[in-house]
Image (cartoon, one colour):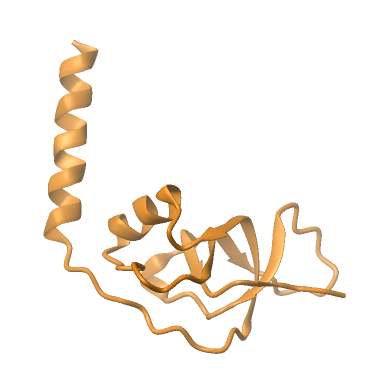
Length: 106
């Protein structure tokens, strides 16, 4: 039962990912302070999976990418993750991903 369900769910996700047109996001100077769960290189498998769900093609960019990011709006807040400055994430990406993340140094 569960194996059939996992096959169906996987098939649906693959179909949805294939149906979403991919775009390459522009890389600009980072201006948005973000608190991210993790920051990884754009060619990592977890970044590729999230990017595919969002219809983003990050191949060839070779930039740090933040996952699980939210805007830092108060100076000195307790991030609990990695504080970085990134390209401002586009609204449709939600808080899933931010591009070109550079660590904030005090």
